[in-house]
Image (cartoon, rainbow, N blue to C red):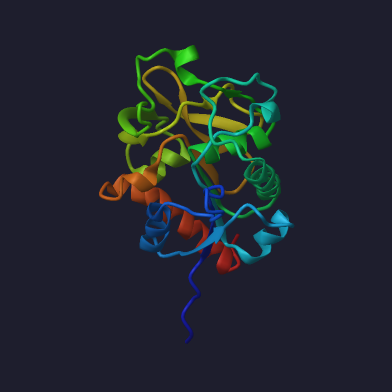
Length: 241
């Protein structure tokens, strides 16, 4: 009896650095491997994004720089940084294809924003301008992550995966979803009311979180998110997806 092949999980990479190299923090790779998946990096220079779905069993849209505000009909803000047209175009095309497909998808930080824009929603270009600083979602000078609590809707898929409805998250963003996009449900919030997680209403397995679960490797609740993605991808491998 042959062993079942491990699910292949595609992870979008960051933009090119100054040396022209695509890169991705290793924590994403570690989390997928720990969950039993095979991580495959997807740099944003692919000519046919939708075709990638044929060779993947699951997909993660990773964090990174800001999405160009022109793509969601908002004005430029001086805090916007690391905009990359190549990455925006690639990931928006890939996201739209993934929404139309049945491949399990997890969006993380920028990934949640990207999936929202692909669904026709707009973003808040700078969170403190709208929500103030009751909750810090990122520290500046220099930019670095911060932790804060998040409340998860008790009857959501996310709560079932995490095994709890309140958890401390590692947050590293200054932009966020402005309004819940059509076809999605808000399933978690920060104490200031900012939307922290979304679940697609019609897709078989598509979740997005505004925080960085890969930066909490010692917390079993956060790792369960990657385990659930890999398990869903495994069902696809076995022909159940």
